Image (cartoon, rainbow, N blue to C red; front, side, top):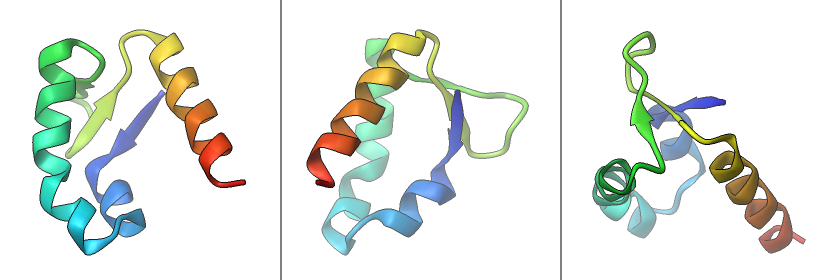
Length: 63
């Protein structure tokens, strides 16, 4: 499971955009995300349970 930074930017508010890079950096430090060298601006989840959790949370909050 992967995503591009640009895909996130399109979905965020201006306030969220200001802190997004710090969030991505911290998630990489924690090991929840890794940069995907095959995709420019891409990230992937090394553990698919992390991806599942974020997807489930996004579904819950969008209802």
